[in-house]
Image: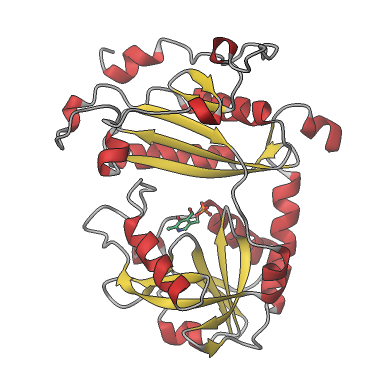
Length: 330
Ligand SMILES: Cc1ncc(COP(=O)(O)O)c(C=O)c1O
């Protein structure tokens, strides 16, 4: 093979598979101290920098994954790698590492961060180019892995549920950048979320161009109506969430709830007994109000609570172990 990806792949990622070195006095000896991986170097927050000519920054040309670790185990790591590779293929980005190498980098980042519960952000950009759009000028993708906890909803929000509004913005249509690609282009989602914030709500629903419910700015959406659980299909223009997949297994296989991936309208949401959101950051969160209308009883619903419990159990007891945490806790 003579491709760039093949040439780069011959070199094992720096630091991978080696014992972690003792900290140097300056905290940066040999670039081995940090928990942030950039193109083969381990760096701390202050030193983790990329070029202003990187097309991830200039054009949002790149992809990412958000991954959670619980109790020293990474939840659904292989599924995240599969989605990352699908996103990469969709935007013709040749990844410089194999999925196994990427997994090892992620596990090492978590081990370096030293917390049993954590969040990992993987970002792969087109790399450094010039100020033009031509991606052929970007000779090598930039690979970034950051292990650091994100700000999450407080416990009371899981009890009380959240309020949603319907955004005036539509989800990017299927015949543009496919919404299934977890790309660095989040401006549409950010603008939708800011509409929610302005209206005093926590999340925004994006409809697709047919007026059907797609998803929220950073979460997938489910409803329970007349004892049936439903979520919009991928063909409605959504990101196929890893949490969505886990929750479908929980609802259908564990709780034996009648389940369908089916087109949903705003009417379906407004008249549902329960609505909830799923995402790596939010996990499973009840919705108590949409566009000023009370949903169900106005509290997190019965099935949502059951799914929350089983999702909590699943995330805390399965996954790929890292460090000594998993061994000592399970
Ligand atoms: C637009 C969008 N939909 C859904 C999700 C939920 O996906 P996952 O469960 O894989 O985190 C995300 C998460 O980042 C998202 O950004």
